[in-house]
Structure formats: C-alpha cells, structure tokens
Length: 190
Image 1 (cartoon, one colour):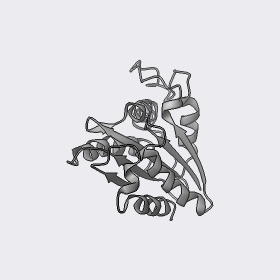
Image 2 (cartoon, rainbow, N blue to C red):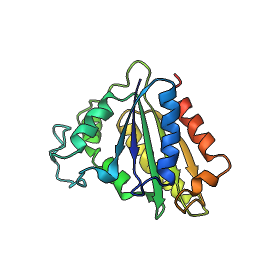
Image 3 (cartoon, rainbow, N blue to C red):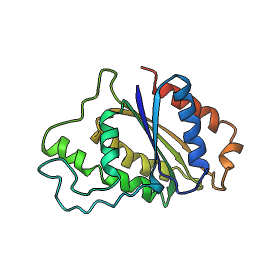
C-alpha cells in the first residue's frame, strides 16, 4: 500500500511534525511505503486561476507540484498534517490543496475521476492549534474534505488537538502521540 503524507508546518520538528512522525511510524511498522512531502521546502507556486487546466485537467505551472500530482494519483492513503493558523490550515498546506484545482477540473468538468484502487482510498487530517475553540478544526476540515473528495478519497479521519502552541508542547498532551500512532495504524487497515 502506498501512503503519501503532506507536512504543512513551517516549524521544524514542531507539534505538527511530531504528530505526523508518530502516524508515519505506525504505517511503516506495518511495512507500508510512505513518502513525505515537506511543503515548506518545496517550490510550489499558488494557483493562478488561469483556466489552463479547464480543458485538460493538467496544470500548466511547472514546479514541484508535478511530482505531487503523480504521487496523489498513485496513493492508496493520504495524510494531510497542518498547524491551524487563523482558523484554517497553513499557507503551505492550502497552497498545495489549491493547486489540486486541476484534479477538480479533471473530475467535475471532464468527468474523469482518479481511480480509487482495489482497496479504496482513505485519508487522515491531522491538526494542531493554540486556540481553545474548535472552529479552526471545523474550517480546516471543510477545506480538507473538498480536497480529499476531489482526489477520490471518499472518507477521512480527523485528529485535532487544541491549546497546543509552544514548540514540542504536543509531547506533554496526555494522549496525542498514542492517538496519532493509532490513527496511522487505522489508516492502513483495510
């Protein structure tokens, strides 16, 4: 089973990355292949809403998204991990999601969905934020749901932690790392 993960945090070894690493550890222990895209280090231009993908379903911008597109097509499972900034996912994560407009055009305008594969496709959204209210989780999940459904992920789990802000504070949460590990394991269960 091929799993791809997107790290949307700009903070090196921050809370989001620690959570993602724990989920990935569970997946790898079950001997599944995982490829992680650290979005902050990738050359990904924002969607220009140029209409270049309307008739072909292919983005005309040549950057690191070209590899991301291929990896999404080949993935059985997709993990999207992001901190919550201003009630939404990070700019790094949102930029990648927005560039999947070409998949939207392919699916909804050209009526060509990405095949789900023999085991179906599943997703996992992992979020960490410093706020007290869950509006950031709700807003991020709405965006993630649109992304996941566009790339033929019919269901996804959400793992979100609030009131976690300082670097490494997720390690002090009583259940976060265990929940991340369990979520990774559950993701690859058929």
